[in-house]
Length: 291
Image (cartoon, rainbow, N blue to C red):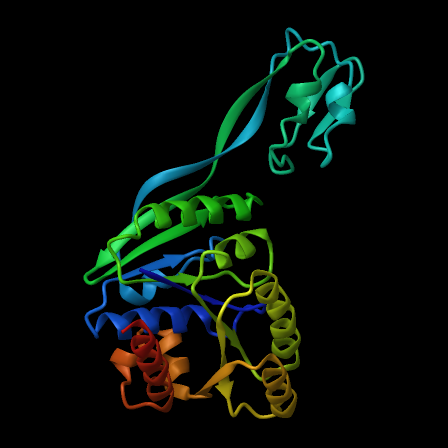
C-alpha cells in the first residue's frame, strides 16, 4: 500500500480535481483506490464521483463543564486560559465562549474548587462512501468551528486504520502548511505539489517545499493552468530546477474549466482534451512506479 499526498501552499490551484482524476485513472488500471478528502473546511471530492456519503464517526473535543454551585468566581481559570475563552463578570457569572476554546484543559486543572469538569462537544464528522473500485473517506468540520487540525487528524487516523486492503491511498490535502498538513504529509510515500504560474502560486510553492524539506519526502511538481497569460514561467522553472524535482504540466484548458464547474471527471467527460492527456501521463508515471 502506497500513500500519495496531493497538496500545495495555495488554494485554487487544482489539487482536488487532480486528486479525483488520479484516483479515477488509476482505478481504471485495476488498482484498488482509497481517496481521502482532508480539506475538511470545504470537502468536495465526492461531488465529482457522485458518491452518497454516510457518517461513520463524530469528532469530539474537550469543553469545560462549569458547576456554578461550586464556582466561587475566583478567576483562576481566567488567568490560565490562553485564548480568553472564559470571561468573568465580577461577583456575578463566569462566561464560556466555546468557539474560542482550544481544549487545553488548563481551566479544569487550576480550579481550586474542582468546579470545572471535563465534557465534550462535536466539532466535525468522518464520512465514507464508495464507487467501486474507489472508496472515499471525507472529513468535514462543523460550521463555525476552528479546530481544523483535529478533524484532519481524526479523518487521517481512521483512513490509515482501514488502508491495508488498498493498493493506493490518495490524500486530497487542504491548502497551506499548518499542523494538520504536516502530520498528513509525514505518512506520504510521494508528495505531488500542485501550483499555478502566478506570483502567489510561486511564493506558496516555496513555502510548501520548506515543509517537504522538514520531512524529507519524495516529491514531484505539477504546474496547473500552464500557458495562462502573464504567468511567471521563468521564475517557476528556476525554482523547480533549484528543487531538483520532476515537473508535470497541465495546460490551461477550457475543457478542464467546464469539467470543474459541472463537477465532472475530465478523464471521463473529455478524454481527448489537452488537460486529460497531461493527467494520463501522470497516471502512467504513478502506475509505473507502483508496478
